[in-house]
Image (tube, rainbow, N blue to C red; front, side, top):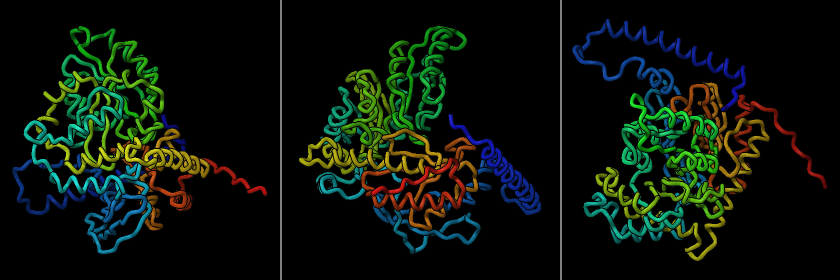
Length: 482
């Protein structure tokens, strides 16, 4: 749990309260004006009720220039940000012809494969010419190419599982798989900070859902014991199946999962382990094989391994890896496999090529260099931010590092000031995070040079002083001794 400074919590609550009060007053005047005007929609139910879109109208629209910024280049270490203007108090943003070259601290380009690569790009272009931009079909209706079978074999080998199945979208990999794995009479025990795709998949399954405190194995065991003792609601019959769902690296916290302890508890109580490695596969571990390799967990002890290709591999889609029986069952029953268009051939080739680079099968050592670079960059950047006095979440080796902002006024201030100094950052607030826990989420890449990181730190430090988000005293700089 994040310990929020008392004064910070108080001022944050006050700020949101003030925004809410003024928003309600404006809504009241709006209702009076609407009542006075002739209404051509009499008899229609409102599509959006006042409170349902209150946050969007009264808070989000005021700072929407900080989100969804268009770019005009590949999301490499540096990219071109398209500037936007508004003539109606930020309600409508219009793109301009002006482009600013900015240091990219927001993309999930962990290993630098999102830009042109000497090994991957020519092969993706060759595949585009040989096949097509799309299969225009599902996997079961002529949409399975030799590339897809090769990709599934590569993924299974890479993550250390007997078999794998790939899908065209990472979000759907969670939201469509969980309802197939478990249903009524089953129990899903989910980490309290799991991704929305997991939450939606769990809700759609019809299974009973219980939550344990974020990354707290002791509470997981407590919940498991209690639920096994009580059984199903009303009937108290034994659960048909229990699945514990966790993430390798939590995308809003930058925190590594306590996987060894969680796996041990799941084995003790005969519960299945479902591991989402969207942000950890390819990014951590000596050979990029994720948190199992990093934390010394045998992949045989993790029943279902999920991951995406949108981060470390510079492509799109997701995968599920597990036993051959499980993968065969998913191919026969999962709607994401049966009804969704298969991964684009060039995207599939990009994944295969990037895995070959990571494993050194391209004939070079670039993969090992990228893995060493992302680890060194991440640990250096996190350490320097902490020395400056920022409150930084997460663990060492994680390329995701949230900087806590808290107060709603500091969200746009931090984002806009960084952009003025050619550093593009991502800010995250409610409803993606709890109301009090707004943050800037920094994502480090292997493509960042030391000079890039030093420049970013200088800018963030200046902006941090200006905005007032250095919640801890900075460490004194050590003088160089000759």
